[in-house]
View 1 (cartoon, rainbow, N blue to C red):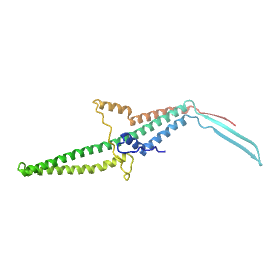
View 2: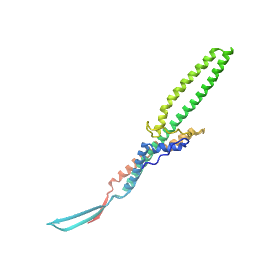
View 3: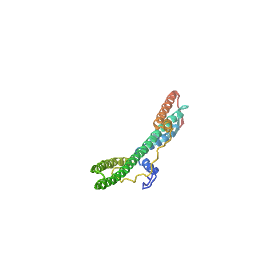
View 4: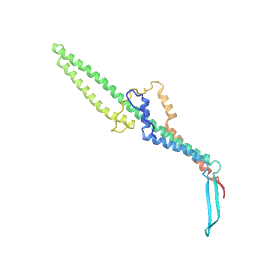
Length: 256
């Protein structure tokens, strides 16, 4: 069953939004189940084939002179089960890296949308403060103009700057709408569904001076795409190993 989603409300930590996005993303869910199904396939690949039960019965003139139950087993050649298990294990590792990649992509979309909203809101706050300051400057210029200490040009200049800021604010308000839809989409919400409150806190970017080199090292060590390629190489090598054992005979035995 689908896990219960966190309740997103005002003041909810960013971890709740991240959990909601991951649990509500069908691509993450699909990748998860593909990985778990492949994990179960490892046990099947390493196990002996199922035994075969047989039953034979002769009927002659309404009589049954003989019946013959039987049981037989198949035993793969030495090393074949281990090689098949290694192929399944490498395949499950590749599926796991796909799952990790989908989860990281979902987290990135959410955090990216939150940072865009945060940037727009910060810029709107700054523009509105500048708008209020220009309003005070216009009022002061009008007062000075009435006493002859300032010209009408000063008043007009303040009005022109206010109009420029008003246009910028309106453009930002309109630009915020698609970013808000992007935020909803990162949570797996449809366009018609209500928009949850936006997170108040977003993870900060690290300011370590050595961070660029650390990011490169971490990317090379933990990048799911690179690890997926590594798992595919292991799977190919395991497949070669299994193919090399094709000339080893299998065995079967049983009784009736």
